[in-house]
Length: 189
Image (tube, rainbow, N blue to C red; front, side, top):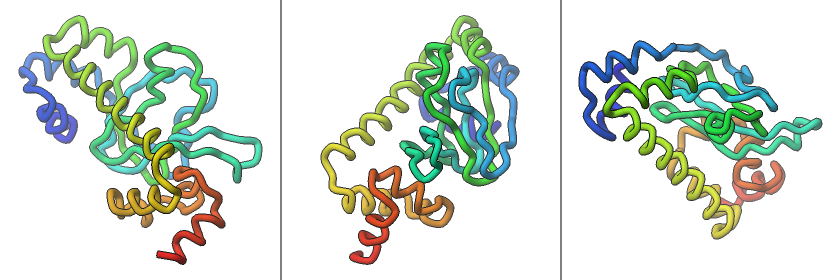
C-alpha cells in the first residue's frame, strides 16, 4: 500500500483518517500473465493501481491477429476500462495482464463512499481522471500528427522497457501498423 500512498501524496497530502478509510476499501489482486481480467461487455467495477506488471487495453476480434491494442498501463499507474467504470455500462474492450501483475483495486461503490466520506476523495478522483484524460489525448494527437516511424521512436524513447516485455504484435497494433510494417521500421533504424 506504500506505493499507492506515495503516488497519491504527489497529488495532494492525505490525512491519516482519510488514508485509513480509503485503504479499508482496497483489495490487492494478483493477475497471472496473459489473463484477461475484464472481458468484452462486462461492466468495469474497479479502478486499480498497478503495483507491478503491465496491462494491455485492447479490442478483441474473431481473428486474434486483428485485435486492436490501444493502450498499456504500467507500474505506478492507474488502470481501468474507465468509460465503463464511470457509466457502469458494458465495456467495449478488454484488459489483459501481459506479465504477472499485482494491482490494488477499489470498487465503484466503495469509491463513491470515499468521495462522500473523505476530504481528499474528490480531489484525488478528479486529478486521477484528468491524468487518464491527458494520456488518452496525447495518444490521439500522436496518431494524428506523427508517422508510424515517429510513433515507434517516441514509444521506444519514452518506454524502452516495453520492447522487453510486450510482444511486437501488440506494439505494432498500438502504433497503428501491421507487424510486417513494424519489422520494416525496425530494420531502417
